[in-house]
Image 1 (cartoon, rainbow, N blue to C red):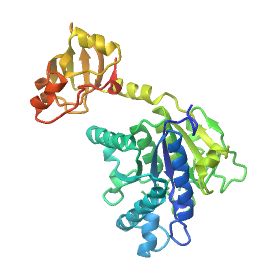
Image 2 (image 1 turned 90 degrees about the vertical axis):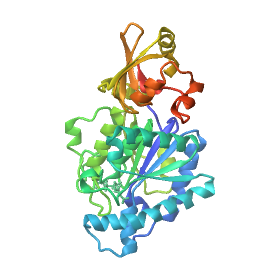
Image 3 (image 1 turned 180 degrees about the vertical axis):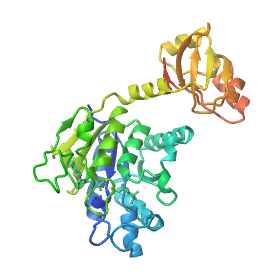
Image 4 (image 1 turned 135 degrees about the vertical axis):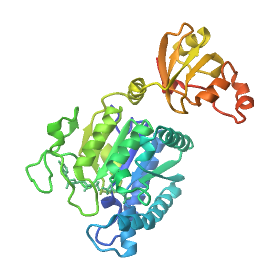
Length: 368
Ligand SMILES: Nc1ncnc2c1ncn2[C@@H]1O[C@H](COP(=O)(O)OP(=O)(O)O)[C@@H](O)[C@H]1O
Ligand SMILES: N[C@@H](CCC(=O)OP(=O)(O)O)C(=O)O
């Protein structure tokens, strides 16, 4: 299990109520400065950090002078457009003094449902993290219609955690964990410290939020925990309102930990193995030996390509005798793969007319 200081890649979700003062509609800049220190501390310990931050609507509605209470979809989208620019700037200004570069990433539900967009998002996030940058993710509220919305950043955070293969997600909230009932309305509610398995009975204990500027309450947090833990990512719900909430968590502040059910790598392999193949590549004996040693599949070892697949699609990997060795996500279209049969890596650019990638199927995307 990954605790805060052991985790290698951490997604932290920040709710609107933490970042924006409900009474004034203003950003809580001192709190954000503390959070930036927490991020710098985690990065100094060697972790990659992704922030999923709500607050665009809460910030924007203050600027636009919109009344309290529910907003029409167009109003919240307009508020998000105004608020998001301020939100991104606030993170940039909080992180820059600590030598950390922030990047803004706005996504919709479709970006995780469509495999190519999903793989693209993943590649971009990987590049950003490789450069030491902290991506600040939010839903692209201005373009997302109701049907294609997450609508709450709890589930978005879990999706981001799965996408980047995080081993820990932390949902910072106005409550310090998951209780047997809503503690704001039921004083006898008890906080769970550790949850190994999310049962229907447990799920039924999660209620809506009551704070007014937040979305989803505990229901979406438990749904997020289900998504994350099934993909090998532990999830913590903790209170975020205090100064430096992550340092406080490390000092033993109360929280609820949902344990991961698999490692991120094994969860990914389960996912790949379960996909329906869109084609097949046959490989030679040398390539089969190389794959068994754990290397990626290069075009040089391919002898035949079947099917009409696109980039990122699952394909079967067949041995020289046609026996199925495994499956993987292919990095080229069927047409490109055919053109690359038997080619060395230094010939790829000449064949395709652009540099391309060395591996046809990367070992992280392969299950044997
Ligand atoms: N079983 C529960 N345990 C804890 N909090 C709960 C529970 N059921 C409902 N809640 C409510 O969920 C709220 C947290 O969610 P929410 O208001 O959406 O905050 P955030 O902005 O962090 O997403 C709590 O303040 C509480 O009112
Ligand atoms: N994307 C929306 C966030 C919606 C949301 O989940 O809010 P919250 O419950 O405060 O985390 C925004 O930036 O306002």
